[in-house]
Length: 221
Figure: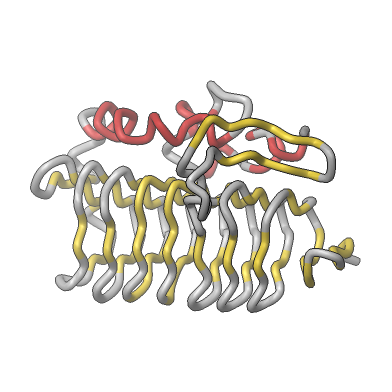
């Protein structure tokens, strides 16, 4: 599935995780490596720009982090990022430059590219969000199947066995996700796609498309 490849979903110049992602074909292949990558990268960060807070948490000096936010390591918060009231960052998290993590938003084992916005009551786990991707209020990634089986990425009759029990969503650059939507395990959203509010999405959504429901996915004009 060409549309699921890293090179077709993301501009790697817009993330500090470029070196990690350029080594793989599909983005979910790095989910098990995020922890170690942050630990390795954190020790190399410019201390003129970053400050180490507690155990394995590096926060850019230009970032704005509310005192009520909880941040567990390993985590890197990029320059000019904003972490708002009562955000819950559980670790294995990269927050890109200029990204927004909103009030009561929970993150776990994720990479947020630069300028990503997860601003209101979002849960994002075992996922990667591309440059300028935006999740509307209350939209979430569901990262474990109800039957607890391994996640399979599906597009029509095509299937890719991921070997992963925990896999949320791979969200391409500049994707807009409507309020209250659920991205089911193994969802892949192509660049510049839009998801209608209150959608339940699974499988692969092509780039430059609008997802209205599972039977109506139309090309942007």
